[in-house]
Image (cartoon, rainbow, N blue to C red; front, side, top):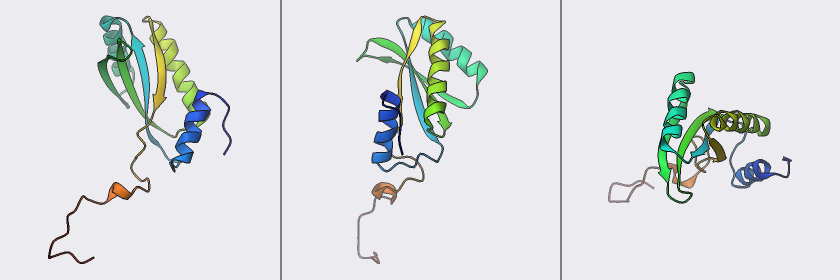
Length: 129
């Protein structure tokens, strides 16, 4: 699978290299940052009103010293779809003196092959393995 040689392409390649199936929908977190809490709260309110299929979280990111909205969309991680969502969110955040600050996924998503899927279990005298 070939991806463009930019940040989004590198992230998608890293996901493939980690064994993630990019043909399946997954939770993708987009990060929007703001200097002022009031701007972030306005965006949070507007996004909530416009789209009930997005999970939103507001927090203060001490690393960058900005207010951050994490907007989680369940979608197929396709390059053009991610680019379009990032552009849409950046334009929207810009109306409130904010901007996007990348995106990411949790490496383990439902349906991935992952050794930790089994329940944590300690063997005892009743085990049958």
